[in-house]
Image 1 (cartoon, rainbow, N blue to C red):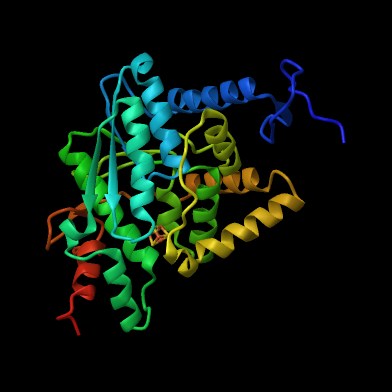
Image 2: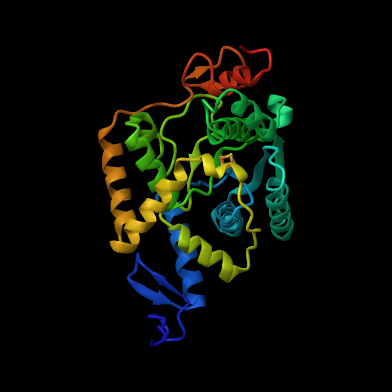
Length: 311
Ligand code: SF4
C-alpha cells in the first residue's frame, strides 16, 4: 500500500498515534512523546522544584524511558533524579536487565542504588519460588515478588531522602491492573492506583507515574527511535501471572475496537472518583516498623511464610 506520511511535515511516517489519530515521522514522534510526558508532569503537578525524585528502575523499557525523561527535564523543572533498583535474585534474567540499566545510567550521569532480596529478606526469589512450589503454589511468585520489591524500593528511596518515587507504569499497565482489581472487586486497589498517590502515611514516599497516558506500544516505539536498549529477556515466572492472559485479552479487543484502552482508563478514573479514599501506610508494622495498612505488613507475612521453620 501507500507509505503513510507524517501529518506535521509530510515526511515518511514511523508510527501511528491513536491518541492523535495521525501518523508521525521519527522527529515528530519523539517531540510528541516527550511533550506529552512533560505536560503530564506539569499539569498534574507530579514534580515540584526542589524535589528529590527516585526512579524505580527495573531495566525494562518503561523504567528506562522514565529515567531518561526525568533526567532530561530535571534541569528545566528544578528537581534531582536518582535510580533505585531491586535485585530479586532471578538467575538468567535480572543480571541482564541490571546491565542495561547501568549502561544507561552511566550515559546519563545518574546514580543507581540497588537493594537485594537476599539482603533484606534473606532469600532470593529463585529460592522463594522453590518453597512456594513445595507448599503447592498457594501464593504466586509475582505476589511475593511485588510485595518484596515495593518494600525495598520504598525503604531505599526514603533512606536516600527521596520526596517522590517515580515508576514506569504506562497506560497498558494501568488498564490491566484496573481490570484485575475490578474482577476481584478489590476497590481499595482501584482507589489507590491513580497517576499519583493521594494520602500516604509517614514513611511512605509518594508515588508518581509520568507515563500514565502513554501506551506500551508508544513506549516501545520511543525506545527504538531514541536508541534506549534493553535485552529481550523475560522473567521465567511470568507464566504464573494472571496478568498475562488479561493483557492478551485487552490487546485483542483493542485490535477489534481501537480506543478500548482509553475507554477503560476513563471508566477507571470515574470509578476512582466515586470511591472513598483508602489511605496507604496509615499504621506501622508491628514486626518491622515499616508503613503498613494492616497491623503486620505483607512483607513480614511472606517472610514468615517462606521461613523453613514455618509450618
Ligand atoms: Fe517478579 Fe513476576 Fe515480574 Fe517476575 S514477572 S519479576 S516474578 S513480578
